[in-house]
Image 1 (tube, rainbow, N blue to C red):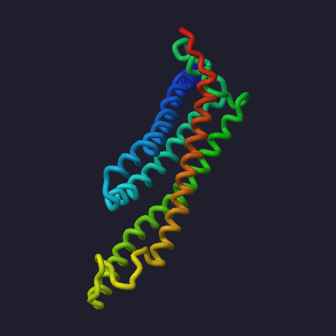
Image 2: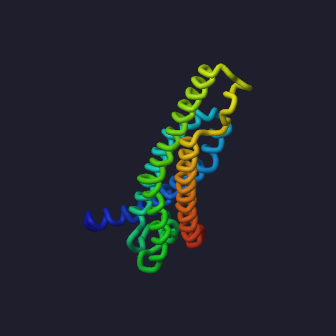
Image 3: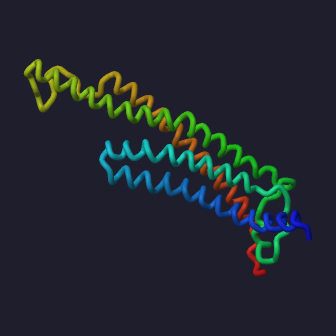
Length: 210
């Protein structure tokens, strides 16, 4: 057996388990961050601390999501693997490009939504989130100066002044809500696509003892 054949056989044996590990890491990361970590932080942290944490975590999360998705697609085998008996059940689970081209559809959907989140909606959401914090500070200072100049206070608010947010704050709230909703929905679509791929993958698993 030539060195090329040996390397090809070794790669055929290693690609299926690597593909499974990468896919499991991707899906686990998405589910943990989206449904557990974010909710716990939102409940446990003050708003300012939660904002500071999220604006640092989500860029890393979306970069990791895109990177893992690329690696999962990269380890997508191009043809049937002739693995040894110990790895045959893994090899049989991997979709073949000739017979399962539709399995690339979830990757295309997840890739598009991941890129949109990474380069468009996450940066917009983060900027709007930071701007809201700054605007809250500006509005509070403006009310404090107005109260001090007028010398009239009623439960901490100037007489005649609205207790609601300023026009700029309303604009930032709308901007944040729009981009945040798009980011959430794109993330859910990406997870849905990977869950669909996982179901198709699991349906072809051969768990018989070898």
